[in-house]
Image 1 (cartoon, chains in turn orange, brown):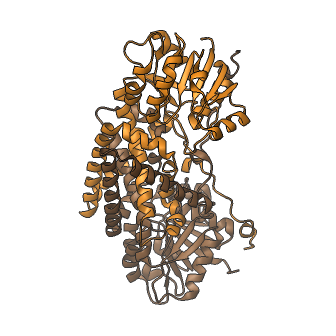
Image 2 (tube, chains in turn red, cyan; image 1 turned 30 degrees about the vertical axis):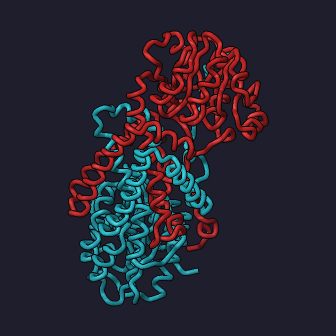
Image 3 (tube, each protein chain N blue to C red; image 1 turned 135 degrees about the vertical axis):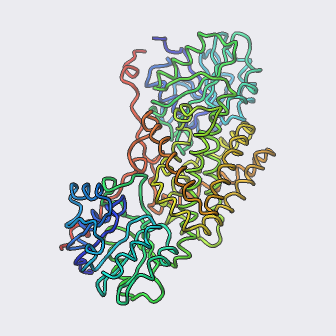
Length: 315
Length: 315
């Protein structure tokens, strides 16, 4: 068993950062946890929730002496954070992050890392639609995958340490290149978010259908999309701006496929529709079998009971 | 309180039909429940589950003497069922259905209804991704909306009776024209299903990303879409073929909006992205406030606990 870190510095105590604080403490993955956030309101909540041993708005001070620093800020904020903390990092420290795009973090943070500091970018593929330090929880990463994208010359021991850190929080770990990561996540995360945001916007803009009707009849499928369309706007703006090429490539494929479906509907090609609708069932079965999804119908949403007065109605 | 029906005939014991059988019995909404299905395997399950008082494959016999008949078959099967049962319907009986498209059922079933029979098409906006008689449950319709689309000359008493029937099963009821229904559902249900099926298909067809990777990293958002893309293929093929015009109209709007988003990404227009991503949060809040969705993060999917060995690890 790898020993805990002496001093874990978490920069940005949103959903992910605050979940790491909770999980790392519960797993005993660090002796001291330092919470760094530039937002005073967030710092107050972190203190009130008792998520860290030290809470500071001063990143330079916060990272001093830390042997693990995790950047948990929107991806486009990484460059500035890297520049700020670079000169204050202790030799031998590991710097990691949790960004949903990895090419940009390598590009933006890497150059600020001094010699002797290990840079091991990471992306835990986990989350909810909620944001902020109150939304986090220790179990967020359990059985989810964290992807590490270390530069080719990274010390194997630093990669192992980072891997062990995520495993201690219940995560599975895979290592790949930033380029492959950004392609995979474009289709499993970024484009799904984009089309969810898009259809919610389309529905909101109807003239012939009122917003009240969209809300009332959302159980027909629409409500599912509103969950990921309620995700943090800044985080997602940054994802699309920094993973532009892969997102546009995947979106091109999505659009081609949708055009083919649209044509099948226009021309009444029921066989083509049925064939696709049958094929897609297998993927969900695979996701459930792999433990990445609940097998419960409707994601396990609980139905409400029949009204008492109705059940008691005599025949 | 409206008295129960003497004889409720349900044609097609899938998810919806079997849920009606369960809910109607629990609510005391019918004295006798007759289950009619042409599939012997389904009839066997219905009998084994004890969902009905009579189980038959003979629709003509099953509807004889029934005062409420509910068609619960894929929408393109309605015409044939209407033709079969028409001559055997008792005067004063109400014929209803549960189809996701209402223009086509009015067109396909209406002409087969003899004089003295009331035709009150209905659509309960409720369901899960599962199919068949084992998937149904009595609480499926609680706090969901059922939409009635009676022809203009329908007897008000028949509409009231049908409304009371759905209310007894816990449903809210709204009355509108078939045309408006088909437009509303195109955006709240049909297009969402289409784009879910589509992205699951796109992901399955990648060469650069393996199916194993799609499954592993599906918690990034993709897995949400696989739920509705696991819905019944025949039911959904029929929906798209019978609500073609409204679906193509809504899909056109979706595509226009997506093209604008795609352009914003290509040109780095972060403000446009952020503005949309902020606006879409309000819709989810409305859906939760209206009771059509759970407020629990991740639809209430339960996280697993941290592994015991990890939690017990000494500092």
